[in-house]
Image (cartoon, rainbow, N blue to C red; front, side):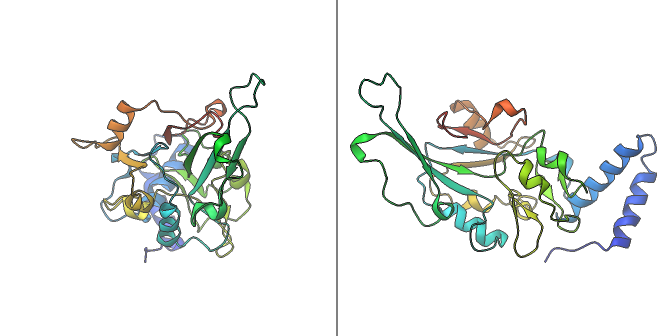
Length: 269
């Protein structure tokens, strides 16, 4: 079980950190102190969030829609049963255009029954009319300019120095502003804890040298995870960037997602 800081301990550490940062403006001092404490409180002793930059990538060419990632995420992070997901997999089926229409493609069917955890029903589009189909895993987009962080009225949602976007359940008031603000639909209000939840890249794992649960169980290596500040000799993230034409979801919004994709169609939003 993760250690919890008492309010007295939290305030005491905040005071010490703020006193040592007198050269910064008041608001900057407060933000720096809060983020330092909240991040390290959920990580093992000695973990320095400033020494890492975690990123995730998805290769849709490799995803087979097995749903193992969704199931692993549910189990690892104690996600409530029912329509609640920190990650899920969508199926895209693109139909051929109608003869003589002049269109490049026909209708697009998108579904994700139970997050894709237990398979998909038969295609509503006959096989002979399908132009292309593929699967797309979805999760927190790790925005550089996170709308969820901007709208949180109490600072419970924050950008960690290591690239993760986290939620402090001790401070979240369950107002739902962040859920409404997320343009990727990646958040939900837990029916159990009554606070906002989302993908954290399995923060309790990655800060201990492990990979996120979804990456660990993927049988085709469709999910790629790494640390930009500590690339290995055969780093999967660097290899992914070199070998693929990557893109982010909804780039026009200016959120600058750090979650990048390869092999997705323009229909993916």
